[in-house]
Length: 249
Ligand code: SAM
Image (cartoon, rainbow, N blue to C red; front, side):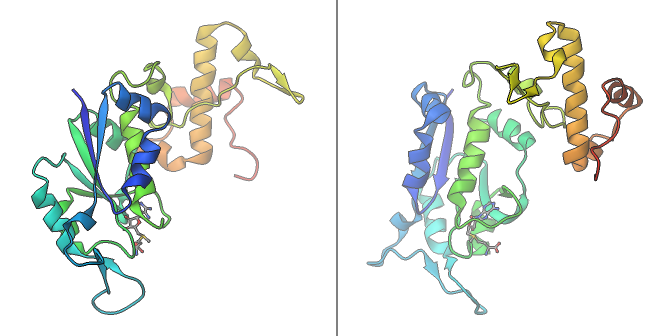
């Protein structure tokens, strides 16, 4: 079944141009997903196709009006569900969300511009409000593309090697271990010897230890969320000389 992805945006090309590249473009050509952009400007009737207005209460900037958005979702009767609105005020979008959404039939992403969208339209249209990070973008399109890419690469058949999904960052609540490729020595820096050993058990153990150490050092919040380190994991880290965080941390 083709995953239906609708994006509500006043800059449709910003989304559709990127969606034609690389994995996204190939996956669409192979029928794994289908993009439809929906422009709220098409629901306006004034000569300037105005989608924004000044904020009630005063202050800087403009706000996206509720009317064109409300009219759009009434007009498009087959809008893909759920509807996620991109906003810095949303809850963080995670890999778990990407997996949940990729298992469904489709998704609509609602992109804001200006100072954001009239809250009444968000309440009416959006099932969820999500952010892609604690920073402020100029518009929701780049954030929508983050969500699209995270979801589409998880659709069955999109990636050549789906086993790689099981070990990548966030799959098991950990960051991924460091990756290396040829040459074995580059500018005097060596690849960890175990990776050249051909011993698959030892390589798996090193990778798990490296993933644990990296997560402990860079994202203690992720480690805490999975209940910290078990006694066996502490032993594994010690066995690989990784029991101490780097100096200064
Ligand atoms: N005034 C808003 C605030 O302070 O929260 C920022 C509005 S921002 C300039 C315009 C639009 O960009 C937002 O409506 C949203 O769609 C999008 N956007 C900006 N940062 C985002 C983020 N971190 N995650 C998701 N969307 C974001």
